[in-house]
Length: 288
Ligand SMILES: C[S@@+](CC[C@H](N)C(=O)[O-])C[C@H]1O[C@@H](n2cnc3c(N)ncnc32)[C@H](O)[C@@H]1O
Image 1 (cartoon, rainbow, N blue to C red):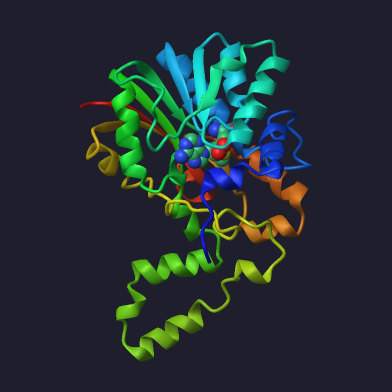
Image 2 (cartoon, rainbow, N blue to C red):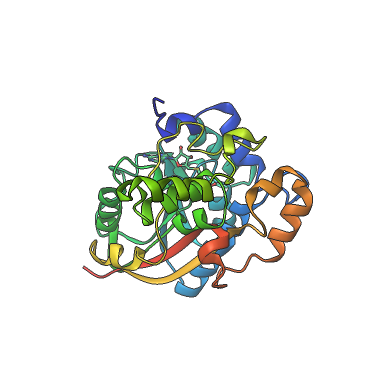
């Protein structure tokens, strides 16, 4: 399948509306407020660090940026989807804030932010859409002052273990190196894993992979600290969000019950997040 660039996908009217609406009301009967939880994690970290000059990279419709601004922070943001930028400007105006707080730029190669000028850069559901995530992080790091913070969310690779579907099968195939097994074992193993549901066969909401949106393979929270250290970023904290109280296939059986139970167990510091949360936030400090 030919992949769509993320900013083109997010430029669609339906995406713009979705990203404006999701922050407006916390209604578990309509949708799971995973990104509201994500924003709360970011806000707590900004309050802890008392960050001064903040940039929201891939700010979307600007809803989190507006909340953060209203909490008294000095924040600006940018996005590569023109329609997201227009919507963000409108949302700022509706909130009696300057539309100039948001503008067009590209987080893979930001042109409008000066090097060594920012205290904190936020990437809320953003950087894993880059063609080259590590290169993008290095470009972002360059914009930070000494000891500046790069706080961003990633998708959780270990979540594949508990989904009990084709993602689990692919994950196990890889870690057991099934391709290298002798035929007889391969067949036995195939038999053992045959009941993992294929998402395509159930009525489930299409995710970004299935929608053909270009994105990086999810990151492993157990190895991300070493990975970031190589880029000159010290991971000072890992915070989990978008918990799944039960295998995701159950979401289709009773969405409200599923969401209610999942919302109850959202706890960024719970070790179960390594498996039950589909995403996590890392709080990185620029070390070189
Ligand atoms: C999942 S949305 C998140 C939006 C917002 N951060 C939020 O939390 O509501 C990802 C955003 O990243 C933007 N984006 C994707 N690629 C980008 C790029 N190369 N540069 C800047 N923004 C980009 C998309 O247009 C989209 O608005």
